[in-house]
Picture 1 (tube, one colour):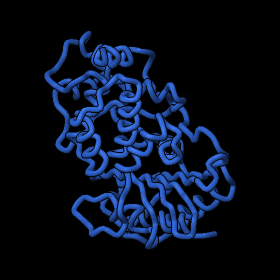
Picture 2 (cartoon, one colour; picture 1 turned 30 degrees about the horizontal axis):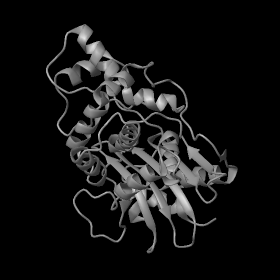
Picture 3 (cartoon, helix red, strand yellow; picture 1 turned 90 degrees about the vertical axis):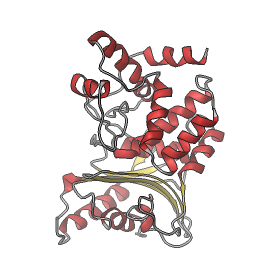
Length: 309
């Protein structure tokens, strides 16, 4: 029965991607926060650097979580659709928790292991498994055109879920790869638009805020997700951790941190909730393109955004 639920959901509706702004679902766009984001980006674009930062190479959404009933936020290019790298795994995590809560998936030990590895260690292979069970699709040899269209409809299940919540301007139907896709995955890229996963910093901030504030799926499942997203800013650096070179590098001692980073040869992104020692609670989403090896950039921007007025 649960497998039938997966297929039923996969075939409902139309794909979520739409050419329009994705944004925060509630709260107000705040002039002071907008001004802070704008001033921070202008300052970083003016800094002398080996490769100067351009305004169209960065997107930022900053949210003040201090009053959950009246969120305030500001942004720079927050509605621009950008390749999210591993930040998309946050959306797959929420979808998996929704599917489990609704009885469409069993919360098996293997699925729990995959969700943990997808978020804690950002393993691509774990993400492949999660997306397969969410959509009832698998990678494999090329398909005939009709079968490929049916496969693509199933693969769009996660997109349809987020469309039902009002998300626009995003695409969440691709597997992340280390060496690249083959077979039907390449067929789908060549045949259907958009070619890549896409997120906006506004949409990512909305989802992370809902996890932080117990507003997506259920409070109990939000707590499970926060456990996977929890980071230790004081932990020693490792080869591919999600703290050093990201927002976690900029937080003061005593900060509590939950985050999901993403990086490729071209991108360096982070989405983080920080509970600062002074009592402030902030959410920062920073996407950068063309500066992937510059480990000071995301932390530097984050530090300036977290500075007191």
